[in-house]
Image (cartoon, one colour):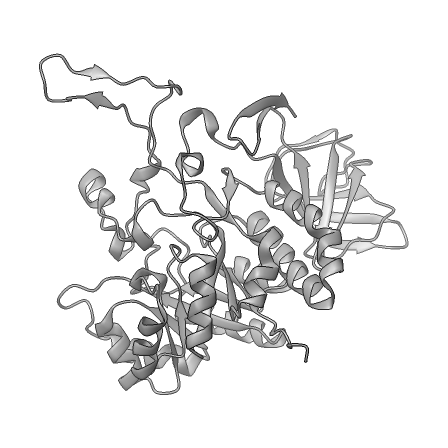
Length: 428
């Protein structure tokens, strides 16, 4: 008897209301956002209650859900007012809150009945007994620790019916599931209460006996400054493993990333899920295209985290190994006139007459075009548009739709990495 595979949710980050709408338009089944309290991204564009309400209404039009991250570690007194806050989220229509602190979990479960509570990855759930423990306390879903292997994930799924949410894309933390105090020490900002300054990604000098009279800087095979930064995760070409092992939600990291990132990654993971559930052959046919798309928004090298092996030095970023983005986001489509074959675009970066660009949209649509007949918002013919957010028109024989994105190849040097960890530098 053939086993029916369950369709996993594609869960995208949304740091702002604009990103929420972009993520959902580009295929996300759910988004997670931050509120004005209890979150771990104090520098993200956290949502007011009014913005949450608008976001929920928009999501409902697409059959999507909105979750709120409330995963800070609370100190004495931080939990005051949490019950009312959770009830407000429930009444707005938020589908679930993502929480790690037991105090906030207890408050949400007892004072806001009807609001689902999901366990945050900050709680480091790495085995099925832990999932069963939280299930008994009323939680419906657990976000697994990033340190869980694929073998462990499969074993967890065999022993529990708790919903499993697992990270598939985005930044990796050098500490265990984000439990880090580097920012507290380096910049007096509490990473576990929303103030992470990403001290691990700073550049450092290493010294032999740094407090001795003759301290010596260590120079290894890579002479650049040392960093504790990890490469990013990408599981786009391993989606079949996630689906076969019963993951309920595929989580994408990046609430502080751009709409270029959010649209591209949401689009790709939705396409990957759709293709595999249609047939393994369909997935294999588009897999390389999906991988190529990921590199267009990559800020660092990409790897598979802990899923298939414990990360080694090859998953550590040093100065010379930093990945330079290959593409830049230049505009979004506002309107298209099929009669005149003219597209109106809102500029986000410098655009020049004659630029080779790529248009892409929901449903994994994309095509290349050359910028021609460029006009500014006053109708003047121009060769260069340097002002962000200006409305421009271009000639375009291929139809596009409002919300489609435009990007171009970024000039400069690009590091291409091989499987053995070596690299070659080419000019874009």
